[in-house]
Length: 121
Image (cartoon, rainbow, N blue to C red; front, side):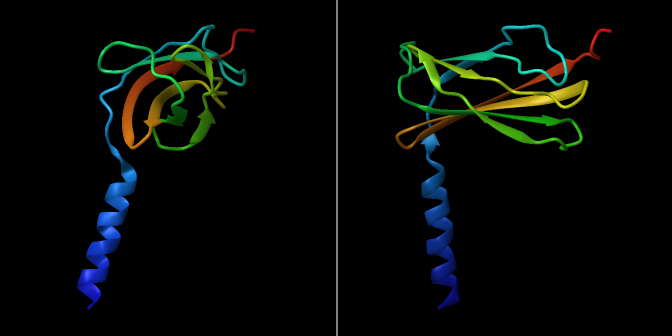
């Protein structure tokens, strides 16, 4: 009896995760990268027909290479298919930024690495 219940729970979690959305996600900073300052990151999202993707739930997760300093920032839609995250990097160094886009039951994730230089005096 335990096995069927486990299978139902596992299938439920898989269904909740959604299916691949095939969205195109592009993001770069709009300002000089530096620690302890909000850095705007416009996130352009299009569908598989290269049309702007509206009304999606977009988040940006940042974390250092040693998987510390993990933070998640919401990215509201600011113009047609463009979302804006404003992460704050706690320290200089190598960071991985992961953008996750959810719309209906579809999900697409894209990650990029960035180096945050030391603040200039």
